[in-house]
Length: 506
Image (cartoon, rainbow, N blue to C red):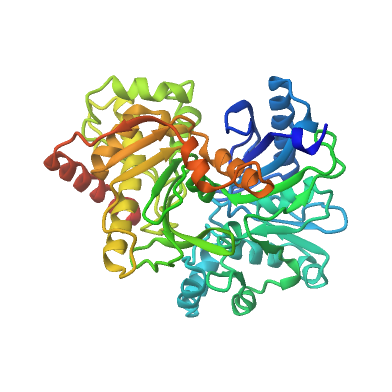
């Protein structure tokens, strides 16, 4: 098969609970998709880990299944695009790829004390200025420090250049290339607490504070790079270009064709992630949001404002697995619709602390407002509403930052593109639009994290000519318009804010 006949793009979406493979043609039509879950490991309360071999096996199995479903030969793949859970942290041996420890997941809170120590030492301002991030266990930097401190021999091996650090994009690139490529992209690097947003390189002062040897770190490449070529695999041929690496939320922004400053999306996955394109301008938040790199193509960097809720769709999994209220996640909307409202029940889904704009790792999940009349349906509805309330808190903070910033891309957000598994829940999306006071717009393809990686890969290898061409491929599924009156919104919001105050002090 000649190079010109290769027109299939393989998008790998490596997420927190599973890996998905999408095969798309040159018109971005989905030819096949397959997903494989992998185990979550919880060694202690507040700790979440992944086994890197289990992650790679889930990728291999999902790719193999997608190819089999479509009846497509792997030799027809023109490029691979990878999008990934971002801050999850792995360190492995350069010689043989063996991890020194399980990967520490972005949800993990074990470094909360380290973050407090850094704040008390007066380092928070420098980290905020250089990285656009806050000192929180969410990010990779303190996870790396923990591994180097706690694993015997790790520090000396890292200093000797014998170890490799990576977020999951880097690890997959390493495995797919047979250990030839130790690289990352600007979007993932910007989530480590180690990359300077302006220079787009590792910051020596931050490395020194956290005690991270530079020899441990991958090279940072622009998003329109070929990051690696496949080698030595039993499910893909040698020489297929890995033509996109991009963090999942930035990939969703790209997949939603939010290419212009002022365009925003929210992904409802395990967590909830609201991101606004700010163009080439770095907006420094004064309301608990993050300034982050979105992507860098054509020699130009696009930045974004972001707010993250640690628990979104995961709360539905908890209703299923933890409480046994539902047998399958798909049942939650029907149960929630069986009651007119939450009956005054408020569910704060702070099962892993609270993210933006609160940044409280010690907050705990809580259900408030229970009465003798409360039912499982009221709790289910309150859980869905809790997801929407968290996103509303983030958008409120984002609007305040935009009004303050002189170079803002607009003082209002007139619509929010939504995606991810929970965006298929019509009840949740309507309540979200009601709270936000703007339209929530769902695309025809809600797997936009994978779609964004496919778009990036296709641009890199020349399957697509421009972002303008990609924008023309985007299709809307449904638009949710605000329908709740202002007084009811205010009443609901006040009840939520009171519950959050309790969750942060309990």
